Amino acid sequence: MKRINLLDCTLRDGGYVNNWLFGKDTISRYSRKIAETGIEMFEIGFIKGKTFDENKCLFPDIKSITPYIQPKNKKLCYVGMIDMGSPVDLENIPPYDGTSVDAIRIIFKKDKMKKAYEYAQEIIARGYKTFINFVSTDQYSDEEFIAGIKLFNTLSPYAMAIVDTFGLIKRKQFLRLVYLADNNMLPSIALCYHAHNNLQQAMGNAEALVELNLKRDICIDACIFGMGRGAGNLNLELFADYLNENYDTCYRIEPMLEIMDEHLNDIYRKKPWGYSLPLYLSACTGCHPNYALHLAEKDSLTVKSFNELLKGIPPQYKAVYDKEAAERLYSEFQDRYIDDSETLRTLAHELQGQKILLLAPGKSIIESRESIITEIKTNHRKVIALNFTGAGFPVDFIFSSNLKRYCKIEGTSRIPCIVTSNIPQEHQAAYRVNYSSYTSQHAEIIDNSGLMALRLLLALGVKEVAIAGMDGYSNAFTSDYLDNTLSHVFEQAAETRNNLISKDLADINKHLRTTFVTPTQYTIQT
Image 1 (tube, rainbow, N blue to C red):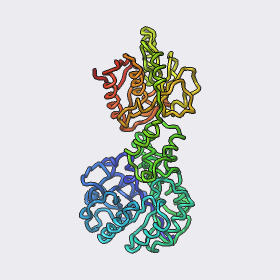
Image 2 (cartoon, helix red, strand yellow; image 1 turned 90 degrees about the vertical axis):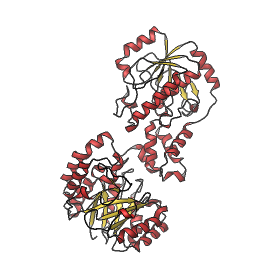
Image 3 (cartoon, rainbow, N blue to C red; image 1 turned 60 degrees about the horizontal axis):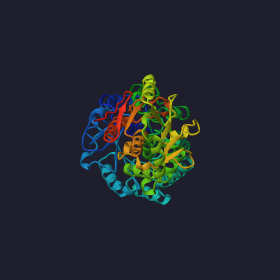
Image 4 (cartoon, helix red, strand yellow; image 1 turned 180 degrees about the vertical axis):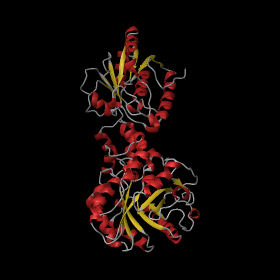
């Protein structure tokens, strides 16, 4: 093996976590600190878009990068990335003069190969080291991959890369791709590996590549702290330490740890990344990880149903995330239509003339316990608990539209349960009503249990409802619910959810008078 190169892509690939908003000072300090580690290559961000924000690692042209990397370290190769899904105009890439990035990585999906070839031809002519990154390399047949390699061989780029976009390439398949690449690339071209860690294969695959002792340069992508969307990427500090122990390299780990402490820990606390069950399932089913992240935010599916939904995503949608398709597929999966007219008549008879209190599992019911009990007793209210057994309050019914939470309730109480039809028939319940009859038109809150229960009560002819424990959402983990096992982080969507639920509550209130007996972030216009 001629040379092992480490390429840090924290600010670029890690930027998916925080929308590349690292801050101007952090970007500059990071650039100086990473040079102290002794790694060979540093990718500062994407070259994309038409506008410049000094606080983001997104640069519309080459010259906008220059201030962040001055003074340049002569031993470090500075890199930018261009995505052929939205490439910048070539006029924004002037001939190489050594003041800005030294290399440009071109990433492309299979259908953009010809466009990438023509673009790379121009970048090479301008004097930049050029990397050719085959996005989702595992999606290529052997013939397609070899044909792509031979096509780009004609340009003699600096490097070509195997890219595990969905983090699902295991060692046997990875080594097959490495052998295909090594036996078909020109000897002068470096072989690179870009990993994602959905199946925790990044470290093992990177070690396997190094241990092959190929007769060409290799380059391994990694991020400090493994920073990256979803399950993250190969940890730079861990792999550098592995090389120090086994290949007599002299990478300095301490500056990497300082970057982790000074710049990345705060981001991690707010928006953590790392191995997770949803991302494991997305990798196993060959789906874009954004489907897993989107569905995980619903917090309504069991592992079995989550896996079934992902498996059922049509092939044309799997590789490219489509939010509208994700919402449609989720809605179709949940919507198991039933005729609930007889159930409605039974429930309407049982609740006729009754005053109702809807009890949600928000933390406010702890502090307001006495006032809630007083409200129940004074007004002789029937209590319907949402997705929990009531935490010691006198409960007459349990309502659930959330399979994941109903699985925790089932069999733990004799309280009669009202469930929606998305909960499969094998799960027993006293009453089952049609799911789609009570959902919201807003995708973000389509099956919010509180709103669905209110719409059901409206359909049953109830005229007035008191509400306790519907506190609203916040961005902080475990802050919204009485039981921490019910908590879920909705990231930046909390305010949106609160506003949409408030809007739906206002519409419901026109026909069903609702009052809150505990503090809430929702507002109801009367």
